[in-house]
Amino acid sequence: ARAVGSPVEENAAASRAALRLPRPASPAPPVPPGAQLRVPGISPFVTPNRDFYRVDTALVVPRVDAARWRLRIHGSGVREERTVTLPQLMSRRVVERDVTLACVSNEVGGPYVGNARWLGVSLADLLREAGVRPPSEGGPADQLVARSVDGMTIGTPVEQVMDGRDALLAFGMNGEPLPFTHGFPVRMVVPGLYGYVSACKWIASIELTTFAAYDAYWVPRGWAAQAPVKTESRIDTPRPLARVAPGAVAVAGVAWAQHRGIRRVEVRIDDGPWQEAELGAEDSGDTWRQWLHRWPAAPGRHTLTVRATDGTGATQPEERTGTMPNGAQGWHSVVVEVDDA
Ligand SMILES: Nc1nc2c(c(=O)[nH]1)N[C@H]1C(S)=C(S)[C@@H](COP(=O)(O)O)O[C@H]1N2
Ligand SMILES: [Mo]
Image 1: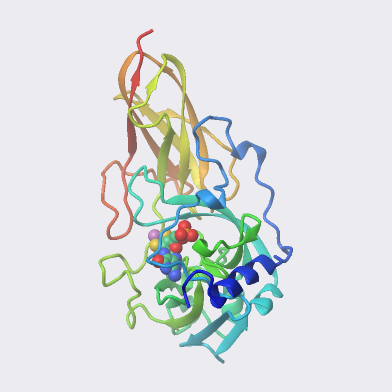
Image 2: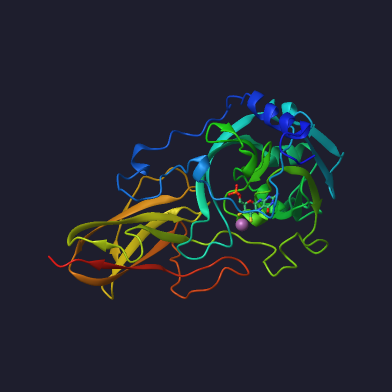
């Protein structure tokens, strides 16, 4: 059934082509013009779908026929088990939000992060209708386990899903139906949590359970059961080991601390003092922020380092850690060669 050109494939492609996205009752505010700095080489504020990183275990990308898709909600504290279709989901109150998604396996300075405009419905509202209460209101389930059509399991804290943040069941990405590679027809998106604990693609069911009772796919493999995103910043330009002309050099990149927001970004040249970078306008606390430092570059080899401070006032620690078990930390540096004058 997975062979190219099979009826299942064709139905999936046709169902995606025929899908008309509803207009949001709650649109995302327009991206402020100042969010996109005019610097060659910086990551675009909105990541185009074709450039959006992809991380999953799928050897063959699932191609789901939207007409046959169902989402089952069941488990501890669910008053009455429910199954919803895509038209039912799309007839709910549709919301649109800009959210930056990041992978826990992203090394400091790495590429596994992207920012998109998602269209979907509130997951918290759907859960409340099903009778679910968060642990802080006495609900029996502290973990929501999402299962995909290809058997992935992703465990998300119920408390965070229901704390008022824009946790979405998303069917649109940057103005089009989700691409097959990004979870068509429906995926989860939860601001502030790494993808492996929040962003189930090709979602098929949601089970309310506890962290004590169930380990999702990555947990027995050494990754943390709960993983809020760490504050990170990245130098996009100049590239590592770039040769640049002396004089004014734009050092620029992105910084993210989803759901806390970015308050400050600082840049250091070699062992010099930290200098405050110019920040792009904030879109929302759930999105990354561009930054720029205008560097008067002198000839020779130099090390550029960046660090960010999030909306709580916490600055990225210098100490480097690897990605396992709950995300890399440390400052990103690049070495560049400035030509002689
Ligand atoms: N079904 C399924 N959903 C998944 C995964 C997966 O392997 N299978 N990977 C997760 C991980 S680790 C991340 S970081 C995000 C990546 O989403 P993207 O590929 O759309 O960028 O999807 C999450 N959802
Ligand atoms: Mo990930």
